[in-house]
Length: 66
Image 1 (cartoon, rainbow, N blue to C red):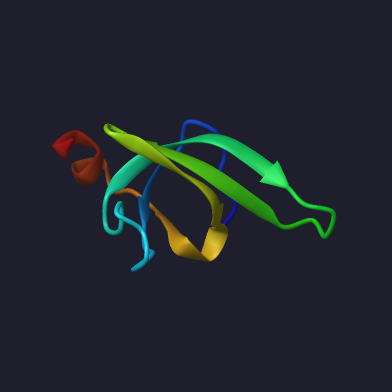
Image 2 (image 1 turned 180 degrees about the horizontal axis):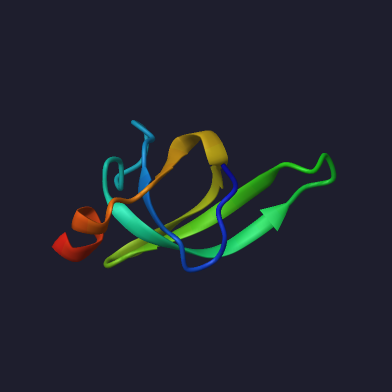
């Protein structure tokens, strides 16, 4: 599933301080191989270069919790 700017997503990256948190995609960058990486903004920071397989679409209920 490809994501677009302004999509609400949950980050799954055990090495990130934002692991398990819901944020908003603020930038989509496609590399020369056609793979996208994402910048996800959270209330208190952002994570850059996030691969698609580390993200899942946020539920409506998760988006309203923040």
